[in-house]
Length: 377
Image (cartoon, rainbow, N blue to C red; front, side, top):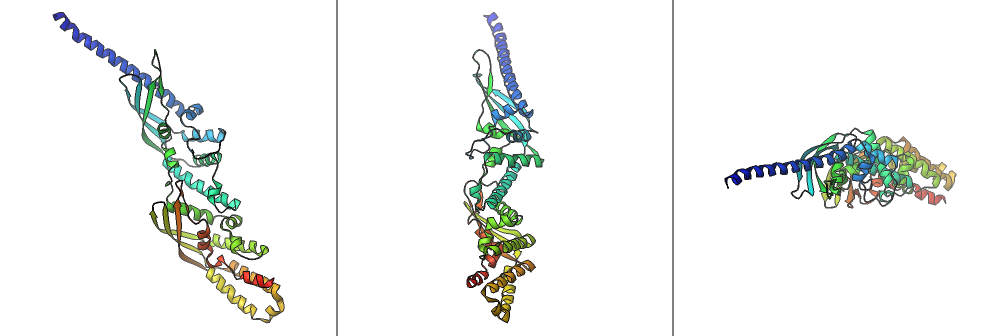
């Protein structure tokens, strides 16, 4: 009995050491699996990247299929260029079939990248709408390939900071006779490995209503004559003959380039709608029309108007309007309210481009040349 009492503590100690040894061995095996996989990400291994982050997962709402092009592969290489990690803790379950690892990840600043992406994508949609003349950005949603081209450009043109985030990784033991550990691939893990980029890209509030409106206005300010004419329908605003439309539209766009500016003063948001009060500085359309009307009245009351006849009177009226637009130096600043809605994807102008056109062109949304044109006929 005394011998048993002496041996029992020794046996318990040996068993404890054996258990600790097994536990340590399991942790080592788990650590080796994590290290081997994450090191491949650090080394920009394309197969490993695709194993954990499918290129379709970043933009799951894009219905089209596309091949894994060189540009798409380059995006992931650029994204993981400064990727790093540190295993903080490993906990192996009592049944030795599951394990949990706490890891500190160093990834690119995905929040800033997603904000830059949202701005670039909206600008691309506006310009695509301007090129097509659709006057509706919703009709020009970019393809999956185009979205990755935007990311590719951003990652090449910008040097993004890195951020540290904590990640929990789940593993399972798939071995029968020996320990074979495998990392569970989940959406949460994919999102963690890209610094939360999936969450940021799917956030409909990535751009605030104010940021969204600023992109509309800044993009519009830099459009050329054809783009602005298509996007705002300038030629339909200037209701003159086809030959007159082009010259008038070009002159008005030139006035926009010289004088247009804006300042967002206030924004009120309620649910999925937002109202933004903005001060718009643009050419003084009232001054243009006032000067034009004065010169036109002087001409119409002169003997020359009677001699010229209807067709020449119309041409003279058109020439006077064009001349007053080209020579205008008057500007004005006025308040304009813009309504935006959040459709669950992003903020968009509620009333299309009509508000933009009215805010920029003012009383030149209609023109007295129309009446002269009709009389000329």
